[in-house]
Amino acid sequence: MSRSNWKTPFIDKSLLKRLTPQYEKKPTWSRRSTIYPAAVGLKLQIYNGKDMISRKIKPEMVGHKLGEFVTTRKNFIAKKKR
Image 1 (cartoon, rainbow, N blue to C red):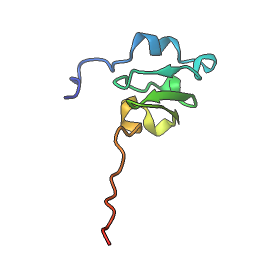
Image 2: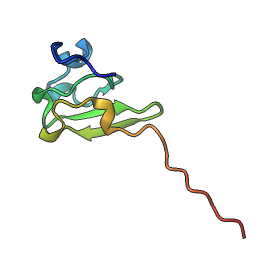
Image 3: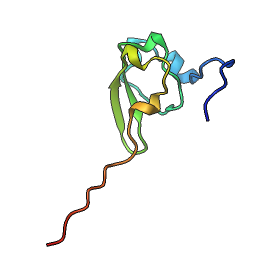
């Protein structure tokens, strides 16, 4: 379910405080936050449910959610029986 057009994009307060290069090494658990233009160029660590995955924020990512760029599931490859 997406947010209504008349609402502003959501960003977690704790993440908003950390949009400076000095805090870019600290992880974030807020996958629901929208990427702001102030975060472009930062390297954030995003939680995928098991590990912290680091992603560099690019200009094309602005307006999307943080969780869209970190996969939460592994690919399953079935082995053939001999």
